[in-house]
Image 1 (tube, rainbow, N blue to C red):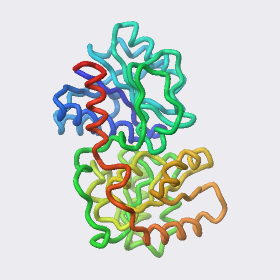
Image 2 (cartoon, rainbow, N blue to C red):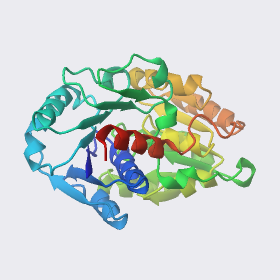
Image 3 (cartoon, one colour):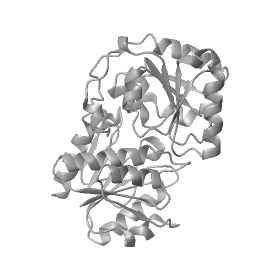
Length: 329
């Protein structure tokens, strides 16, 4: 059994948990066995794992990630914990797992989130556009690039043609700690009736209710914590996204996108994706946010991206095969 360890929350977002659920399903489809390890308070994702028939367990929050290893069941472990809040603890966690004779793999980040620990995992996967041109990670094996972007099996299906779609999907992350959703709603009141606004499942309940009311006030449709965005991307002519992993879902469905970033650091991390012609960038920290967002959205609505592009929906299967090869399952 391969265990995938991830977190989700207001400061971390939900993309890691969504990715691990998709990867667990892909490992199973490729003939392996996989389960997911979450924190004790992630009931929504535990329910999704149960619905998909994926074994799931929880660990108690610890001050140091390495201290939770005693709660892990036997088997190799895949870590999807690359995040500035956790990065300095990853090497210790890998080392502790290896001291118990565990095989390890790590799903890596980019830039400031790149793994550079002393402990060398058996496999490091950097599943992002442009990663293949970067510096190889310290690992026994390393793979990288947009072809390894992990998405659910529904993204293997050919997308709906753009001329059969309408409206704009807004998804500013499952947690949106920067309150970008409020800013986008305020910036596009004239787009209201054409907007479908996702309110993520890690957004606090009271704030979610206020966001839904704000969306309805401009005639937009709030979407409360959908389990999958696949159908919503395939219904949208364009989308407005945060700096997280949803942009790979947009790329796989050929949905022209605008990426809204809260600051310069997050904007810099989008450079490879933007240079590949997969989206338009708006930095919320710059002046004239409203004007820049409207201009970028107008440009996105005129885009006709080529399909298939560099993200083809097969990445989860590719990563699953590499994991099974590495771990000898």
